[in-house]
Image 1 (cartoon, helix red, strand yellow):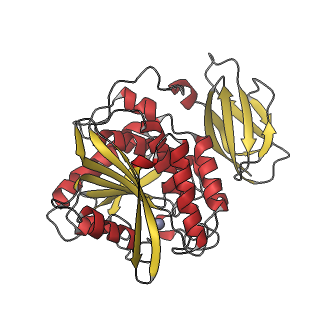
Image 2: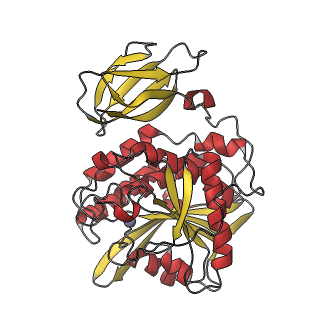
Image 3: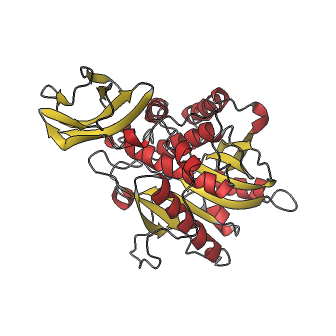
Length: 394
Ligand SMILES: [Zn+2]
């Protein structure tokens, strides 16, 4: 995504939690299942697929990579729909994976993002959104939801929303009556910047014509922001919805909203260049955006509010409170960890996932004098639980 128009606007609604939407522990437990290891692996594999320009072999490779991922998550070909399209001299495919709702199987929550890239591997734009959609699909696979969910990976976004516009005209409007869509939630460029703290998210508000759907979209974006505040550590701000795959849905009268990085955002120097790579973004931010998205998709699809015994809700709030300090650090990195946690290890990896350092067990002070200045990830393991934090070494 790239914003074509830059304008400031007045924040009308105050950015705070509306009372109507209450915290649901089961939603938080599932949000906490977003895995840093999975996010990092997806981002690395996505990057390795190269420049996924619409119509190229690399673009097809990325499409097939997505199908392989869904298959390994337990989805079957019966859940897949490969939407082939041709437009403006380009031919490509969108991948749609559907999970059936229990109460309203014919009403759909769409969570979408594009997988094509331009000029570079697009690890932020939009490997970030792609990775999060895969994590939502994994975590919610066996969670009952009242509404059906469509996980959609569009191609042709960078050539002018070609895949999403053909999806709306050919598939959404291809039946009579047209497809019944509850809400469209798009994830595009949510990777942040490696050198920033990345503590805030933009949520996209529909301010465009047709205006018939704007009031409903204003409620949806507020609910999305509430989910970010409830289920992730991030703060929120609002930006006008534009220039990404929800636009054709918006123009079709659907209720739309979305996610966009705050740091970077309007001024990200890497997107649409050869340097749109993992090394320049913040995978911990992607994890945090993922927590919000697992929360919001559960909210919109009305997921079960009770945690099944077989679901793994392992990461405790205890573990989330672990911190490295100072950050940025030099020579010695300290670990703030609750007193009741006795057995832990710390592993430091670089942004390519290579292990740089493993601390001695139960060490609160880690010698980092051999580390070159840069951005690293520190993973604290306690039994089978892990939490990952970003570390900046000066
Ligand atoms: Zn994009």
